Length: 97
Image (cartoon, rainbow, N blue to C red):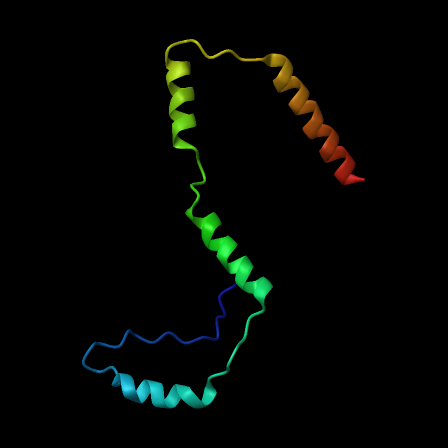
């Protein structure tokens, strides 16, 4: 996102200098447009809100792994790491073609 240099910044309006709420509503009404969303759009909005409530990180899993590492019991499978690295390189090479 780029900032438009032609925009002029104005200082914030103090609480006393703000127009009354009724005046703002009266000016905004002629420019309002009615928007109707399809059932699919409503479903997507509901899914987005559900996804937003799911944490990005499983804290319990992270804590479990931290404890396992701290106790020295975390086993590293170098074969899985090597295989995953090769797979990711193959994907990158395939995407570059």
